[in-house]
Length: 195
Image 1: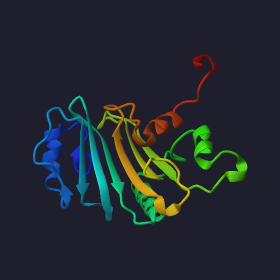
Image 2: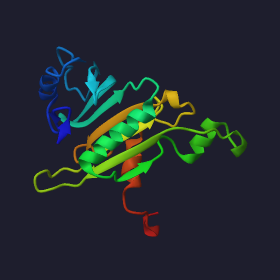
Image 3: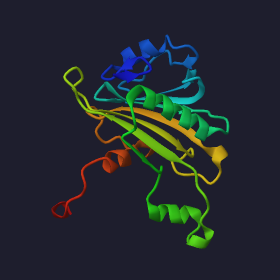
């Protein structure tokens, strides 16, 4: 229904009021006019120190909440713990994929051909919530272990853990951090006549 106590659909003013009561979070005293995004620091999420919080608003309504955790070199362990917690609460994930760019972009980042291919680290799991009678909006939670740029990394110690809470009804094309790829990967297969 929301993210860290802020219900989806809340105005920036309502969100700021709720966030002011959250311990350790550094919240601005005033809002810019017509904010589409609030970026905050401080505090904890799931017993982990937070690098950054982002609250995105569409037409003045809260639509996407993001938290970037500071896992101190054990990102995959933190990711697995969060994934286990989300699975315990919501059931198995709707899907798993690798983070970041397309295959062609990955080859470029890895230095080209097969002989130069390095082991990479990173994974993304997501949970989908269809509309119900009580909640008419479609929602998704994305848990990502990736580098700071949202792509796979060659050193496990560089893994960051990011969680996205998205109301897809309010923001149907959330593309930050490769979230758009989650929507595409879980949709119906492409038909010949669609091409």
